[in-house]
Image (cartoon, one colour):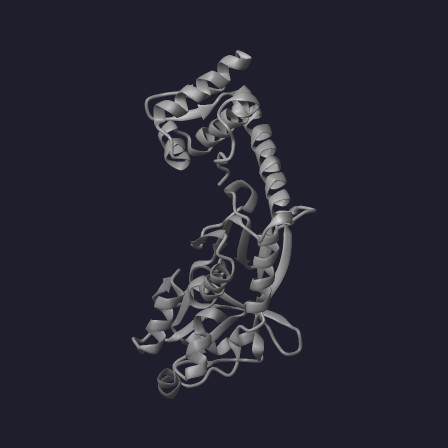
Length: 317
């Protein structure tokens, strides 16, 4: 996401900063054409600037083929240092600017797909309306996002967090719930204990790494697990909800709460075994890079997310 700032002059003492930014973009995109598209330049201009940079210190920094560009060993070392230096320069400019004006500048944000579409995009839209000088770039997908390496300022993530140097804030709980349609319960009976699931066709969310079983904690705090069997699994929670609601025969479903909350409220689905909580418990967190002087736009956006999360239907109780 690091780009050459349009304010950098292309001559004089800023020329090297301009060329360094181009070099960083080429390595990240792994092509001159990709960097040119990102920077709004021609491929030939990008190539010339990188050549000038290499000639300045008499070291080859890129290996080039007709289809691929990769950093040399020396180039890889230079890339890591240059990327950090440009980020420091960009943050310094932003901090100075924001002391004199309203929050402005780019903000790169990543939300999980379904959670974002159902409950967080409205939050982002309201933020954009309230802060028109912030260039909000929002991505919605379920792949694992590393805020540092992928260049995002704010990432919302579901589940347990590995130890890292990132700043984290808990936004909300995210229990996985066992649900079924009323029609299914009328026909097959209400499971009264986890062991009863053995006689049912359970539709499972394959986004859960333990989709082959249900791990739970009961009211007494005892942890257990029940093997699951079913004829359908999917990584689309919306599809699984539809399968349960439409009573296609696979109607007991285990899904994250944000997939089923509206259907539970409307009575289309009924929660099963409410005294047994899916284990381990999962939460929704917001992650961002640590910085002693966070840009105002980042702080405002995170605060806005925290306020929105407190009003999620399953958090209101």
